[in-house]
Image (spheres, rainbow, N blue to C red):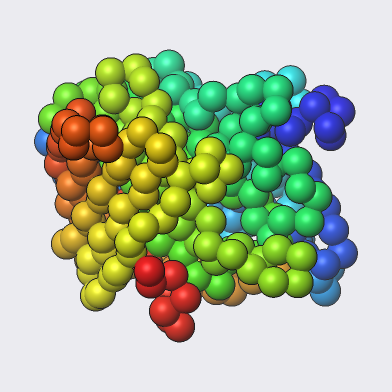
Length: 324
């Protein structure tokens, strides 16, 4: 597929090779029907400025334990006409994950079957969650949401311990570029009281033309409707505060206001990209609790209120650059 066409197909391998460093990673989160266990699986590739290229798979459990598998560049392959990538003996599509990883210290294997994906809409002038910013050629990091919510069935065995995920829910996103932002908050949950409800939220300090700004992208899926609050839709971040293990923020546009409170985070450590090299560290939790309210500003009518369990939470703001 031509590189330009990939703009409208964010799931595909974007192949942004650069001498200044490059990474690309897919993020699969799966939660059992009961809410525990929850697991995150992250395959990807890294191109370091010095020239080393390699593939990887990270696995994270809801108790904070993580597993890192470093694999040869040659073990990675991708289809050009559909979403399908292979890393070593692992295979990833929008309908199935097959894992077979063993580095002599940890072993992860199993298969997950996934239902119909529910991606962030892709439109001609807004190809996914980044909206028109996806067309900017100099972004530090690009982002895609490949499925806000889908069914999950199967078992993943980690070091001999089976993680039963039958009847569960899943979420899939990806990132690619050179580095993660200097500061960001990320919250995700589809562990609400019924299927088809999902929240994804990213607030970050974005480099831009020699300066920077705080950009926001929040999506709340309720009964088939995606409520979008983003910098490019005219939504404004009106409050944000965070402390150890908790974050609270609100955004609003002309018609609606969304309020999010996330707490209970017990993080583990994942590797993150710095100029393409997977040498950074991210504290991520998979067992947080998220409370969400959607309010109609005219009259203050509450359109939705819910609590999501087994929620993903990241808070990386060492200098307080995001507090409003």
